[in-house]
Length: 83
Image (tube, rainbow, N blue to C red; front, side):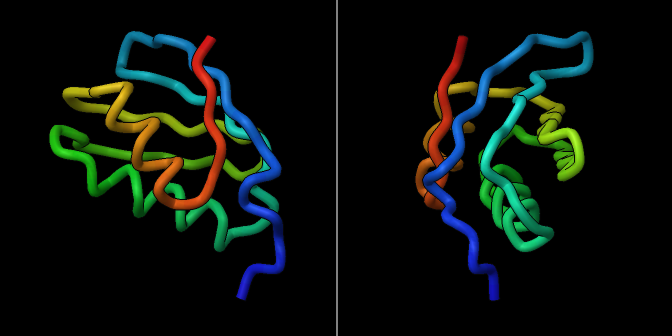
């Protein structure tokens, strides 16, 4: 079980050619990354999700609805902000 504080981090968003990249802070373990990945995979239109715990990068491919991604991450217990 993860002992981290899920609400401790925030995220910024950068558009990329293949979708949307989120720079997430506050993921402290593999369980955090898996929780974020599972929440985002549940968003309609999302085709692929990659989470790099080392860099904090969340890459989402497919028909990306940024408000839906934000809602999914918040629903998983994390904070997210778009810049």
